[in-house]
Length: 238
Image (cartoon, rainbow, N blue to C red; front, side):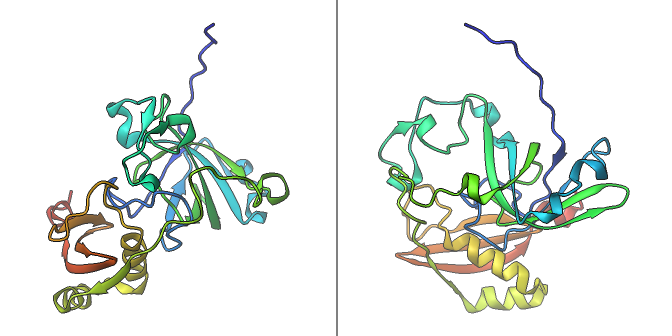
């Protein structure tokens, strides 16, 4: 039986420091320093967010736009299982879903209302340019179920220790990137953004974070920041 299709459209697009899929936190709240802005489209004015500032957290429903062209699969390999065991797509939060819909619970830092409504959110796991379809307030007594069974996901993932090589420290100081960027960088790398099946100690990984390319390698449970450079497209002014 087919149901009538209702067209949905974005109400705004996320402005995020995560410029590529690699490095984005795998779940909301794991990187508290990941701050994003959601400017709503002009049609959604101040009346649409009246009363929302009284809530600490909001649900965002969005589209995994970065993987739409990759399609979907009935079976996926969750990173929490080492990328070796398959689970049904509906038993995971994989972005490779039939409709590529995502749901994130983010901390609402503040709302600005002037010519455009802007929501400032933290703990984000969202790629820059993510289309947001809906916003709903988080209501703890309805939605918090700490005693619920969570299947194969038992607690937060283990964290890597993040260390800096002297050259990377010098590059950071020279670029004057600031304490907020450092915190974002370290919290993001500590989550181990590598594919679950990959453990090549000598490999140098590159994460495009804000306007900076961050180079790092992982040895056992230590992530070494190797270097930082301005992103090439940023230098070109794109």
